[in-house]
Image 1 (cartoon, rainbow, N blue to C red):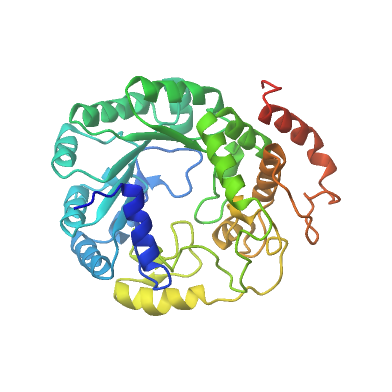
Image 2: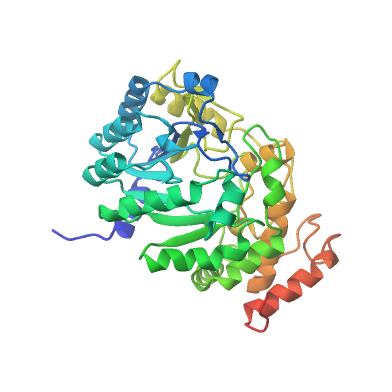
Length: 394
């Protein structure tokens, strides 16, 4: 029997499901409660929030939904929060998912991991575990989380998993509060033989309040981090070589959504509401009132069929392949699913200028050459271009 790499296997599965609307991957938020109070989080609630706890799906409801998504063809499942271990029954839910043959990834902050939890995960090994590290020192970590002692509890959770042969991936979100420790966080991970990754994408809270954006890095700083990370920079250059030429990226359709949500992926919130993704709260189907099959086949199909109501600069943008703009982001940040998010536009244009990716001026885009904001970005463009060629050290 021929052995397949995981990359080849996953690519074949995705190709086989293309065009058939198979829900291959899903994300389930088991709770929005969390022991931390991270300043950038879009959906955390206090652990003692009794209303939130009572509204969460029961263990039996989780089991029923897991049975339904497995029967519908789901293979990859992400459990996230809030904090997944905020629920005492989470290991029961997780084990049911494993027994249904799902490849389960766990997102956690690690602070609630106990020896008993670590033992169980060693017995029923997840496909992957990812732990967010908010700083390389207790001072920075706890400035982000707002909870004294949380840094040591996070490191303790990592240690418990490693002692049982599990290798969690460490990651962070780049913030104004921790940017200065990103390289230290990477070295910390490498010292114990763990993978490390970072991202700078921050969204408003799920209720559209903008508090988390107070610690978001500006677009130039986001691109500078790309240029300072050799592996990340190489990945962007590979993507640019593949998609950064005219006519390679598919032309936009007239539908509102242009992603995998409702086509090959889905999300379920703590209260059983099915949607396209974890940050999309505009259109939701109540799985307490209907089955997953009903929600997937009829409701999400209808959501995906929604038409855009007006043209925007995004439609003709040659940088759509590198931009994170989507209706969910537009809704959260602008209160309008079709209104481009300025931060994302600026970041994509600056990244393209730094990587020497051609930009075809389009419509009334303010960030293209000749646009109203093009001159205002001149200093950032020059600095980033120098970094890309190795001629400037920030």
